[in-house]
Image 1 (tube, one colour):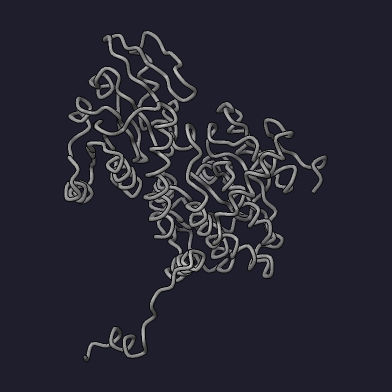
Image 2 (cartoon, rainbow, N blue to C red; image 1 turned 30 degrees about the horizontal axis):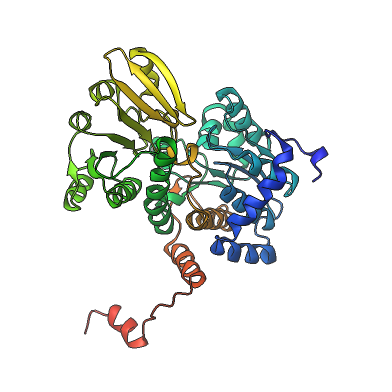
Length: 421
């Protein structure tokens, strides 16, 4: 498809060459996706199918889109977050790879919604979602568009929560694969990726020393575990806030202090939310914080911290650095908000390293293949990728790392599958 025939919306098409370099750099550290691409080129599993993807527009996402196109998909990409878009990558996808892309860093909410509609105008057979934005828009506003959808994959915990709600209500109109429930996704991406990239975002935004400070992590799922682990490794005193007794117990057994947010608010120096829920840190918590506390979010949506409500208690908002704002409060204190309360690892930094997204996007690619191969056989509910697919991805990663593992002997297999020993 020629650019003159292609509809797209990017900030500056002249950034395309720089973006191409970025994409090629990412691909060098994505060996699993490259192996999948080689198979897709031969087998063409998506030939004749239209794909709409709503994901963070980064160099790693570009690699996924290129792999899907190599497998025959006619794809369109829109941004799942207005602040995470890499404009040079968006331009490169249009100019060098012929993938219609609708993403501009800093785009307004109205533009963001119009881009979602562009994804729907593509009349997708298959959907790749991050936060359930395309799927929820179909169900809420364009239910007729669901008729032609084979299925969707979902990248995030937040999106899976929304899909679970649809399934529970009986309103989900097509099958969905929750990629985030695969071990090779949440183990690699959430724990190692979010843990490292969130600390990277905090450091880039504020350039502060973590060692010796009290870091409060709200949420001890896989992302929270990774963030707590990395904060501890940097010398922080870590407090974990949880609502789940099992997760709270696990955090306590790992050596972290565990307490409610209301109590932690008075002790923390740096706060990071990773829950997928709303107003986890609310006004009463913000007003109780120390003068000079830093507040950040690594959950999907920007309402985990009630930054909007905080403005009512503020006398002045001062831009200190590109992703750091000082909220001067009426009570005389100052609170430093990172990345406007949006995903700090993607707004203030570059998100996960390519080697991490290699695993996540391998799950996305194989998740779509699973839906296509099983078209007409699946119920309208949320699925987890089969264990053998998860194992295949792990095996491909080990192979790329030059790591060999043992295999069971026939005697051992027989022993493990027998009760009569």
